[in-house]
Image (tube, rainbow, N blue to C red; front, side, top):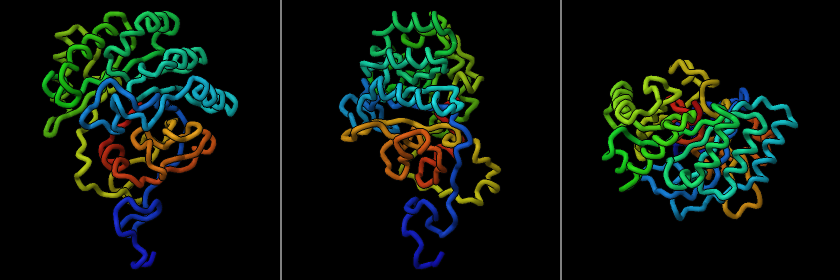
Length: 312
């Protein structure tokens, strides 16, 4: 690549970094998890929400049951080996068609993972959830967002009066023997060991059935400063970092989103980057099976260097 043709800014070219090195990409090894964003409307407006969900943000409109069924049917028709369907938002339980689409998912034999804050929107559906648990058992997992094991740090992220309803909802799920997990964050300067010990103390005090030492049951994300400079990932980085592209989230997952103003849903490469046209993979799962260029700061900060994944 000629020097005068180098991109002037980081993450501005899908093939080349700002230094003129070949940008890393990730092939789809298998579509193990298909995510649906149910819509960005949420009962909370968290400080560091990756996709800016809030009570007023409808940039991603409520996805419909019919649209979800279309993608579930494509999985069956194309014999795609998808094991898990994930639902995220916003708050999924605010979507008026969410419980029917969750039921459709379980009835078709998929495992279902629902990301929720376990507050009032979820609690309105207690009877339906108990029925689904009775029918499908541990095929349904609800992962509750609890940003820290202390009320102060949690509410600094999620807002005042969010701790009590959130922990009460988590306790209800535990007491009723749902398959549950918690998603939390590590504060700056906090080690993984400290965070897991803190959550373990909380779970013991509240008699919540979660093993804080199990990364499947307690998923911890690094606290990310989006304004901090981050290195671009080149093809050489796999060897330098001793990383395998097959371990990166977009090697095994995609997310369906319905952007406001668009006629129908589209498939995005990543749960964290629903608005970037460079990560729009097409209208169908077949179209979305191509490689993903790691051309966004989240690719480096969250996945490659942070080692995180939305699906355990």
